[in-house]
Image (tube, rainbow, N blue to C red; front, side, top):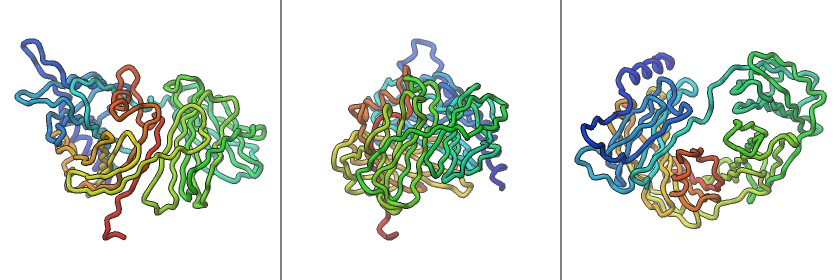
Length: 418
């Protein structure tokens, strides 16, 4: 079956076979909800439901439900079940990034009974497009970065580029690399516009050096800029994007237009070599950092079994996470991440509930392949529990990659593959 036909069949199956979130009917005073979910800003995409299920600490199912609308849902205790004071919450949201369906499965352990979470969409609807071409530019020595609020594209092509607009009018930031350095030009653009941008008067970019704690052959760095102090609004602009070319480096220079952004969000990844089993991450908001802050922690051992992972660690950190994935014969891609406090020695994958199995019939614990474990130290928060409280705070929900943190990721390599 062709991929597009398969995806169409999957969507028809989802819409015809699933109901919306269950609503309990009560003839008397209803019980207290054990969990409240607020879906906002189109967290639930059109035509693809979100599955939510609760599990006890051993992974046994408490309840599962299917959500189709961006609204508030109250989850009540099932009849006859004793609800633990803390349980796991698993959220499955899906997307079709290219030609296959991807299921993002995130499980959060040690969630307190009675919690209220708000899950917010990360991107507004597109309001249009603009066509961009560059004229009068010097000889280039690298890719061109086109960026506006919520959208960026890095390419060698200076003609007829399409900028996606999430607000109109907007400001387009174009960065070019030349033999004399890096230059930028900022231009007002609007929906349906066709712009020939003259780069002859582009201004030289400002730069900030970030030093590494090790010589990295493989690294990635992305710099996002915010025009005012409210980092939730407007949508950030990608100010710079660096990807290594295999040459070891002990520092990098991040570029940005002078006097344009009030603050930045910096995301960095380092590997000593492309084949290293350890990858380091660092992210921070505010000023561009002077150095990559490396977590002082290590993963001593990982022992995956079907449905669980035993892990031994050392050092100082706040959160441990584990990642499994699986691609079925129809190219549905499953990625399952479980987040837990620093004291966790065994990570349990919860049982797959009926709603999950109905929407994704090929999913099974036996099929999941363990990929890596990750330790994270949170600099602006004190613990995993504070992160969970802030991450889905109804008054100010955030994304996990927006918190100041340093992480170590260690890949799992079976002994017989070496």
